[in-house]
Image (cartoon, rainbow, N blue to C red; front, top):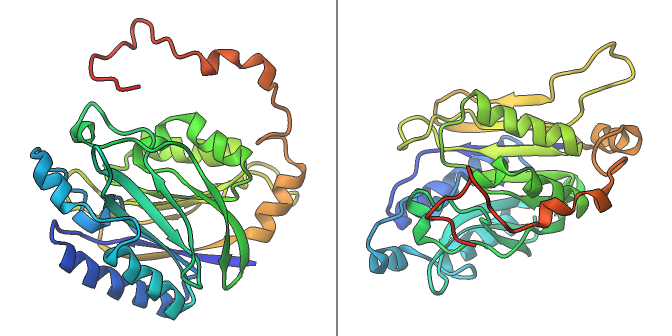
Length: 291
């Protein structure tokens, strides 16, 4: 079972009509290239633009079940292809950074809002999401358990861990930041330690503070026929704008998860009580932290 994942590493604008048209065109091309799932970079509806003026920010936001997402819901059904479309979601008191995932029939699987907002930057003007979700996504290649993180979520091991504990086989990660060696290493680590695939879609170079390098890590570090470990990265795009497709071998991943030592095989949750302690002590206290 080879699942083809298309990462739409394309340049956005702050004009929703242009992003809608370009997004529909990119999805259509991805389908022609054989994609089963397509993923957009972070907050595609506005090109990851977060104005300082709150009234303008709210004006730019769109409903999670509005016309913009509805166009991609219909397109998913027309193309028989799952679509992960990202938006600046209308929400009170402040908008949210959200990905809406539709299956190949146009059914909404979830609307996940970024939990770890970048409160040290422009995302201090956004509300955070409430939790992580995993859904049984119907694709043309069969059902796969899918969840999402968004950009900064990747920098917290807990994000990927809780998705693994909910059964995620594939995690879709919209992104809007420079993907350099350390951030790529985080994704590699999250995939390795949880034995799951992670697909990240970034904006290309030319988009402010972005550099492409969208990736797919399949999470399979060892195979019986190999003496040592293998590279779990099955796709790393360059900086250029484009549609990048990776073939994820789900049969191989599922077989690996049945016998390898990572994930939830040998954990001791009763000994991890400090992980739920909410106190923040020196040197990690930050004045702009929001609980």
